[in-house]
Image (cartoon, rainbow over all chains, first blue to last red):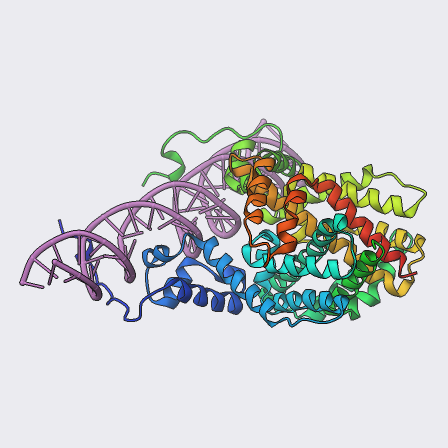
Length: 228
Length: 228
DNA sequence: TGCGCTTTGGATCGCCGCTCCAATAAAGCT
DNA sequence: AGCTTTATTGGAGCGGCGATCCAAAGCGCA
């Protein structure tokens, strides 16, 4: 019987530049940014890197490992870019906004973070929040809960944003059309049964996700001030 | 040539009790409660219902449709069970807690909701929040952002809880062991570089998710009060 | 030059969601 | 009752996925 590898075309030549974990993570990031979370497949990675499954699995544990590493990468870059501020309130706002903007630019980061908020790369985020709460005179006994609440809020927004991006990436509708459509459906609700939602139609259509996010952070900051 | 259906064993008899969307959703809920999100597969559904793929796809659009319908079911039941309260603050807490407890009992609901928070079944949730914010004298201009912030907070906690449940369901470790492990890692961090996280070790080990969630809601409520 | 060790490529596996269509039962019609 | 039409069902099969496995290919050192 003919040896398996002898059949068909000859084996492709070995790649000249060595593979590495970093190269794989880099390629994964480009795939994710280009086509969203579903664009990251092992097959796509092999094509992009002109290699095989085995080579990739030699450097990383599994697909989740690649996604987690790419996410860590983005988070680390964000935290490095957020400079300090004398006013703790402003600093907290900057910190949260930094993460928001990063997730806005890379929605897959939001999805992954809301799935795994305990990654080592997020430790610096928690640490910064904790210190700023201290600077805000939040008592030690309340800091743990307060930090958790803020993180959960950010993660909630992150997940939501990721989902919106996923929905918009696939279809042919843009954000404005999507909001108009949703607002239209809200407007058609029975105003007696849903007065609040019905009335919120205009705001839904015109709101900015970023501004709404900031408004939410400010509500939390006001609540934390009450903890003093 | 022999007809395809003539080969092999005879075709299974047609089921006596008719299939329906409700029956499918019900079976899906049982699968999800029993084995988590990954337990809901088309194959498992066909086995449990003693039917085939075609019959199922005749009644539902796709797998996402089944998951969404099952989630709606749980949410509707939650809102029906939350009774009103004279004090708007208490009512908001009850409302949020109702959703929290439901997600705690059915973690897959949390994952699905954090992915799709705009389901029709959630409209009543938004509506209730909006009305209660009105009762809290939150000005109309701030109500939309405030409601969004609260929903995002709840969703963030929901996603987190779902992830925790997923992690714990698969392995052999329980919640206490998991927290001990995380706390252990936190404790080993450099206290100079991570003073807050390092100090939070004890609280991490002893905290109750439910109490922490309530604490977050209270911070939020305090922030709302400042909007008046 | 030879030989072990690391790195690579791709065939292969099992599972998934989903499509498609023949078989069947039920309902309507004459 | 007999025939036709429609709704419903069961399951073979498709393409794609993550993951495994192993022979081939380079590499470093003796």
